[in-house]
Image 1 (spheres, helix red, strand yellow):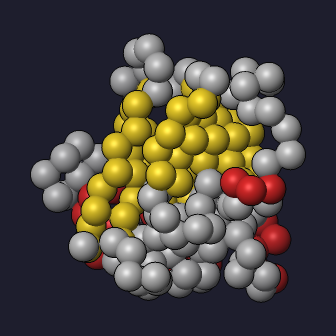
Image 2 (cartoon, one colour; image 1 turned 120 degrees about the vertical axis):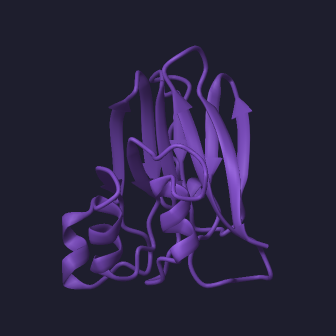
Amino acid sequence: MMRIGVISDTHGLLRPEAIAALAGTAGAAPVDHILHGGDIGREEIVDALERIAPVTAIRGNIDTAGWCARFPETVDLDLGGLRIHMRHDRKTLDFDAAAPGIDVVISGHSHRPLIETSRDVLYLNPGSAGPRRFKLPITLAFLQAGQGAPRADLCTIID
């Protein structure tokens, strides 16, 4: 089994509660890999996450500074036996994710946490782990890979 941390919309703020949840110091197991769904906000965010586990990150609509060029707008990767597609805004998905055999689509942008399955594809938005927006909770997610269908769980770090 592989435990993947999924975080998005940090907007330059990496909360200690998020670090603790991903590193396993909050009582759960540490993650094996971290996926950042964009709107990173500051380069130091990725550096701090890399001290916990390897990171795959994409840039979001606020990531326009020069340092952001190293992050693509979309990523396709195989991780823990899962085919994962990442893009910041799910509304820009311009293909049928089930057709190419993608298991999981990771997005952010809306700040609204979401886990849903459609046509055997798991769509996961971990919500926002950065500054509070829209009176939504501060969240991230965990993705389990390795046995059977992928499973995702939301983690509210601040209500």
